[in-house]
Image 1 (cartoon, one colour):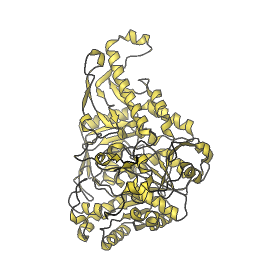
Image 2 (cartoon, one colour):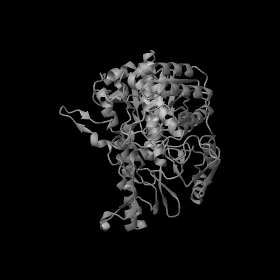
Image 3 (cartoon, one colour):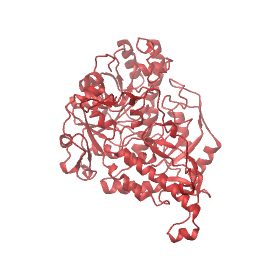
Image 4 (cartoon, one colour):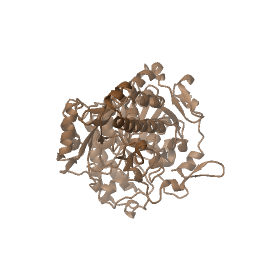
Length: 589
């Protein structure tokens, strides 16, 4: 990472990149021209039927990049993912990255884009961070069609008799307006839409009820896209259609769950999403293939890119490097217990990204706020503060090792980090059980800056992996929640509200007790409380509500308040974005 004001911006670096034709990237990894669906010269979709031809190829090594508990600025997981793929390429390996498609909400908010940074990026970064091939738009339309279908059915049932409905081939669903759990979505940060009233106006404008908007990345349809599996397009499409039919959007007045199948909209949703199943292909600055597919948030959903992209990449590459959202307590745990469980794929190595900055926050450093200057404590050597924060790294290493997978710690270096600080992280990481701890400078040097990291990952992948899940699916829902809370988060106990108790009982009665758990909580602490830094112990986790994403296939308990629609800050990133005199995008980060 460079703080030098003369160091070019991410967009400037991306703008000077020699981007290869996407067909060349596809052919280089073993795809055939007929399997490539170009979207211009720089990006494409890869038809899932390619799996029928390449599915018999041996699988490459499977690497998951995770991190310590991050600051609001992020600690460079995507940059490390791309840098590692470039580093593996520098060693002569066919390496492929699999990452999520970024939401435009954060892109135009404070965080900026998610293409990586410096000389470890996905390019063209403006196309990556914006519309790409339209998958998010397709999911937005599909999701909002469901919302419209719910309100339309409720409206028409209010004016028609049972006999009139029967003449149309419909049965009365008796939707309870107070138990509709499907809101509308848009891919923009907009706090004014968190709580709205729909159906205002006259009687012809619908029936009024309270509702709201979420950001598209939180849609269950996005989680479904990430978890669909299949051996070709037809089987994946069938899996998509089945999952859409199972989605529960409301309850009837007698408590009966109402699904997309009940609304007769599941088929239309699958049709709107059918082209999204084909993974998107882009490239790194150094010409390695990057699959960009799906984008569920990790603090609400499971926070990983698609199974389909990973499966395709594993049959094409020697090493496939994917990334899990936020820290190891969140995206990595869900990668193992949800994504790998659905796919049956087994990881060979975990790369744990750590920064001096993040670990100092966990040692008691001042609060880090996006958009504000860092306190000098983060840019000057402070070994006692860093040592105090190492408990966070040790906790995450222990969590990763509990799944039976070797761990390599990647220290994402900043120019202000001292050698003593870097050495301290290495020393404690190795003592905590990491197989290697390597300083990486891929932001400034690209693949060459990640060569040592790549060598460590190759060695780790050659070690035996004794991969296991954290819990068996057959356990009761509360037992699975307690296991995650105590073994991953360090909680002493879990406290359930009466509402949560009733919901768990209802889910188990309905036959959903076998589903895995996707905890919805803050990403700024291993615990449920964002103010608890380091590795908290002896606390009680409150479960205030438990919801079910039946189509996606997981139960998600809510720990504390979770925002599903972000807001814009005082000076959002969009204020810097424009088009120059030559028609180029400027100001995107």
